[in-house]
Image (cartoon, rainbow, N blue to C red; front, side, top):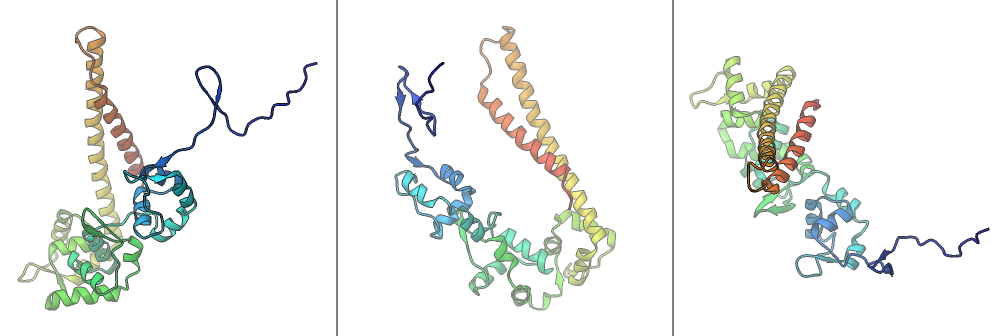
Length: 282
């Protein structure tokens, strides 16, 4: 009968050198921003905001890297960061204006967003390439009356009318889509070529029209994505032909694999996007 081994199993496997001798396990000496974000379960933008707002420590090593000890101290703060900044990345002034325009039914402009900041109604959460950005949750919590006051102060006697660009912003449509539907609906313009705000708001309240436009835009976006897929597929097929030429000795050198890798990664992303668009339900 073979005697039972008295050797206790180790909790973690140990590496061995070339001679088979056990080597001690090592831990990561430091972390890049990407590695720390992964450790904390955060997106890079969430990590950046956490550092900017003092919820996470700044890098303590050269090259904007965090030591293993500091990274360990930050472990567990991911939920706090998500609770503070949300799951969606901040947006710039143009998109912020469009979001407010859709919400309050007025032609909000970037300058109006800046006024809201100056009045203390909206916080600049960070900057991106030198431009201010805002959290979606902060935009959605602004009192609509504050937004209306800012827009009214800017527009004065033009408050009850809107130009085509402003109408498209309110509706969240491409400009050409609004122009077409305005023509189909026979919307009248004044001497300045402006539309009655009430008529534009009525279009926004038309649920059937809204669904029709959303479906139209979804199909257009899907068509564009499929055309991108075809272009990338052509790149892969061309690479395969060059590779076949090399295998058949019709070419002296094999094709570079780097373009193939980029094309395949792009194709994976595009096909995931197509799947998302095909299954999207408004």
